[in-house]
Length: 99
Image 1: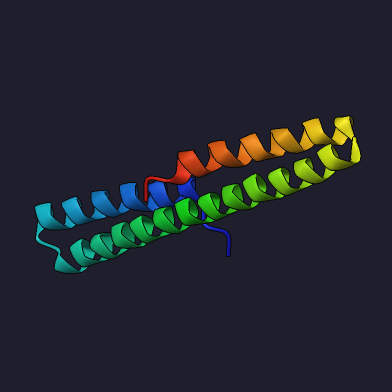
Image 2: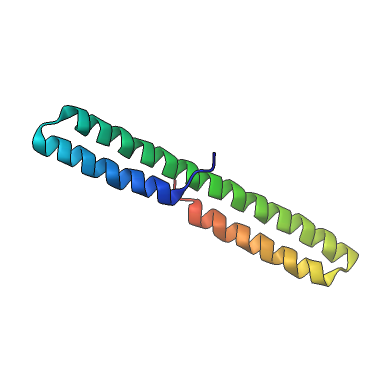
C-alpha cells in the first residue's frame, strides 16, 4: 500500500470534525470514531513521509553512483542526468525529513 499525504490529511480533518461533533452532541461513539480516524491519518502521514524519505535516499545514492561511474567512463551526457537524479533525491529527503 502506498501511503498518501493527501489521504492522510483528509482523514485527520474528517476525524477532527467527527470527534468535535460527537463531543458537541454527546455521542461518544462518533467521538471515538473521529479520534480513530484522526489517529489513522496521523499514522498514514508519517508513513508517507518515511516512504518519501526512503525514495529520496535511493535517488540520491543511485544518482551519485551512476554519476561517478559515468564520470569515470567519460559519459558526460548520462553523468548530468544522474546528477539531476541525485539532487532530486536530496530535495525529496529534505522535504520528508520532518517526521
